Image 1 (spheres, rainbow, N blue to C red):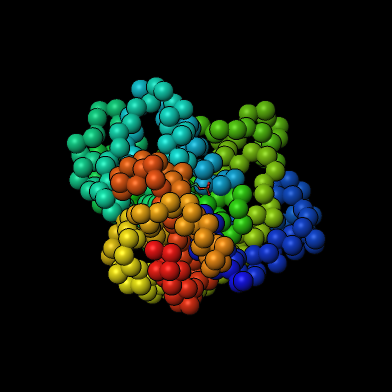
Image 2 (cartoon, rainbow, N blue to C red; image 1 turned 135 degrees about the vertical axis):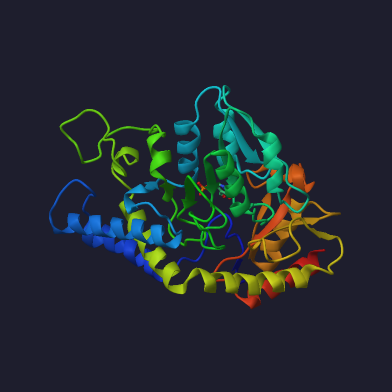
Length: 380
Ligand SMILES: Cc1ncc(COP(=O)(O)O)c(C=O)c1O
């Protein structure tokens, strides 16, 4: 039986062919370190890494220099760096009730930092105006997921950014579910930082991500780890300059090569085409499941403010058994459960049952969506 991959919110698959090719080329032909040596292949690693930073800068309309695109071991790391490197005892943070544990768990590791959640409605949307009432004199950060990995709802980041700017509070966005799926504009959203994973909508490998930082935010951020940077080796102190200050240790070069190739692909296809394709598939999916009885779509019914992440509740069945059957009987690969975001399920009314999550990617076709709809209908 052929399989149909609909788990792109977890990680995108398949990757463009150029991604694996670039990684293999690094491992078999290049093999040099970054920022350490100066022979020809080592210079190449510098150029490929710079190209990755420049592409990310362009893709997200990032106004700072490419030096402020910090390459991280992943999105979770970038979010931890902001939470643990920027917040101080006594600070207050505003998050949404749709956050992933990549935000909530590090936040809860800081007992001297308090937070409030802006409550999302049953479709997974916050009302940005609710933020006003939560702001306190010690509020130092507004941090939220742009797109929900449970509901697919996309928050109005521009409105949140405008409110943050009005109070002079830094606004940091978790772009895990929107980067490569939904237009994301660092300047227009008034961001102080944006964290993205390489392996989801940006089609790169796992184990790498980026944290785009304004200079202002970078100055207030303490590095989580320290070590060799290949620079300023006359000192035992971390350099002050970026990106070195936040990139200690040997970098993930296979990941950099793979992600650089992925970004070239994503940039060539363009955000508009990626979005248009996802809109086509989303419309088909929503229309296809709308009239299936005993299946509830837990998230936005409209298309404009959402990405292709669909949580379904098979109301009179065990959602885990449905998920098992989807793979066993139909070869459809999805994710079931709470998706690392328990509070989001409380907002959607699906805690602790969880949901069956279908998530679309650039490589999915209308036929994939039709097969999923048929399987959902048969199982319902
Ligand atoms: C909204 C959201 N934030 C953060 C993360 C964590 O990203 P990663 O696991 O790539 O570090 C995810 C992963 O699914 C996510 O969906």
